[in-house]
Image (cartoon, rainbow, N blue to C red; front, side, top):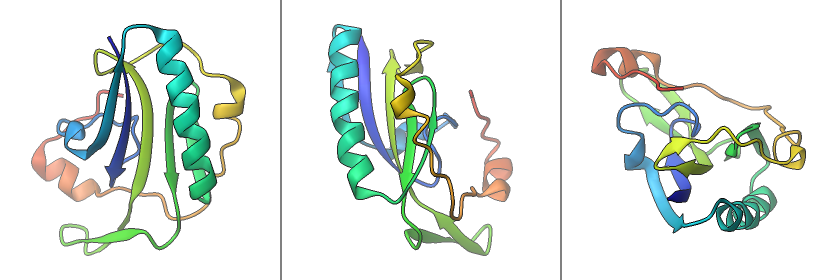
Length: 129
């Protein structure tokens, strides 16, 4: 099964920290890759029109954000950028299929992009990347 997920939180969707699924706002499941790709493209176009900044990977993983959309992190004693993540996955794992270049060459990754390193280490979370 394929999933197209929309996430919102501190991390871009390619980090896959231990509790990454807690950030999922929407998940739509598909039997075929073609159907999942078509829905991903619809969601990508929608989010692209709403957010100023984009950072994308070539395998259907993309983060969108606007400056000023941040939350205070006690652990970091700083504000953390909040991201809207979009991902096409297979069984909740990254796929190896490459998305069209229009979905990752449109990257505009200016702005504040960081995550809480102290919190990640203190919780013992690791990335699957």
